[in-house]
Length: 137
Image (cartoon, rainbow, N blue to C red; front, side):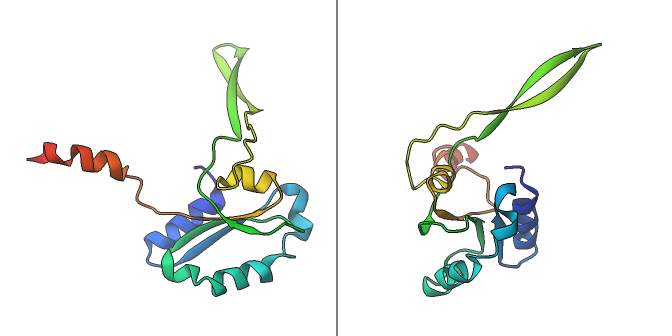
């Protein structure tokens, strides 16, 4: 929700461009380039950019494969610790629980796969909107 990488591609799409956010963990920075040709071929083979304007890709070197995913749960959460003088400091806590659901981006990556998630800039809940739109009469 707050990634600078994802934020940049949301801005690109809002300006009429197609965009792909590519992210990896700090431990993979030196090797993150390795699977990029494989990812590009996956996008071309499945004509992904014709289907959606915006994707988030989480890269792992030496991945087991590439999977289409949807958003998983929170990985981190902040606990605000009182530091005195009405000051509170956030301390990140890992809250991730692996359910081995390879349709979720978090579980997919934690189980050794590259995650490709189609996104949209429309943040409206379509199901609730349909339910409530009759109130506009």
